[in-house]
Image (cartoon, rainbow, N blue to C red; front, side, top):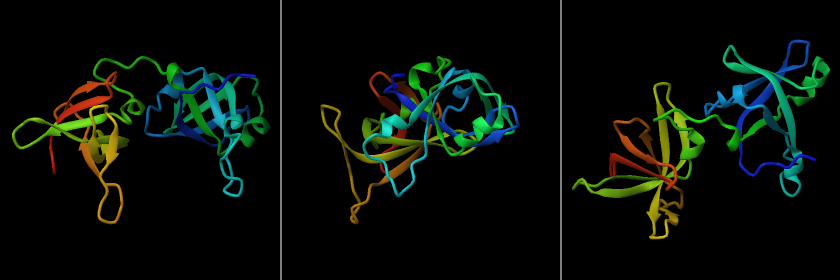
Length: 203
């Protein structure tokens, strides 16, 4: 039995079979879709109906597949798994989510970052005096078509780097959107999970 990696990242979802020779069609998420073209091992997670819920045993629903071929096709990724040669094999995989180990991601180019690595980073901006000031924690990376945008949950951080969210009067978490461009976020330290920017506090 294959050991399920503890660093799996969800990259897409199987939308249908493709053709009659066992290929599958995947709708990749905006996050790091190109990794699907290079990773040779995918893990497909079986869909769980609301009636059954998640709970214990969820890890057993990850099934490993060896990828023989994968390529872009009209905004989707089509792939052929080892041992597949018939549509009847690929059709049951519809609605499965596609996961890849973070260790299998190709090395990012200089000044480029995988969005998944930005999640949970602490973002610092500048106060009125130009001094570094904590803004919040990155909870999601969005794509507005021109560049990436960080969705940052506002809060406080202590000396041990423990984050505490700041809630609204109604008890809801509050977020801000910050462009992830060099002109704004000038320093990225993934090892320290820290981003430094010139984004003004309170903007």
